[in-house]
Amino acid sequence: AQYQKLLLYNRVKTFDNYNKYGIEPVEINIKKCIKYVAHVWDAITQSTIENCWLKRVFYLKMIKLKLI
Image 1 (cartoon, rainbow, N blue to C red):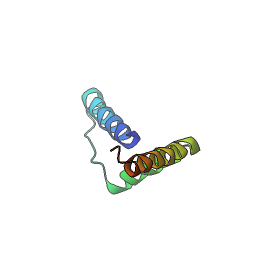
Image 2: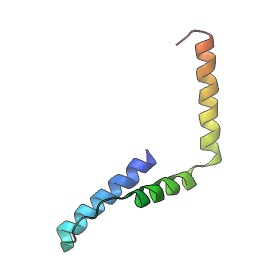
Image 3: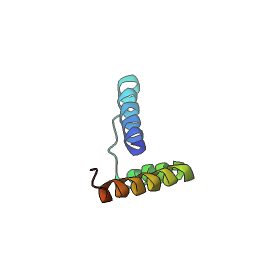
């Protein structure tokens, strides 16, 4: 979700710059995408990772008990 927010922010900013200053939009390339992913990865906290693992364990227990 964070990557999508960065991408959307970039596109809105690009659109605003075009309307305000006449600056032509620049396509997003692989390098910029990698920078977005790196930025989002750096923003992940230890608690986010722990919560993901806890949810996964809970999900597996639900499957084992045939509740889902």
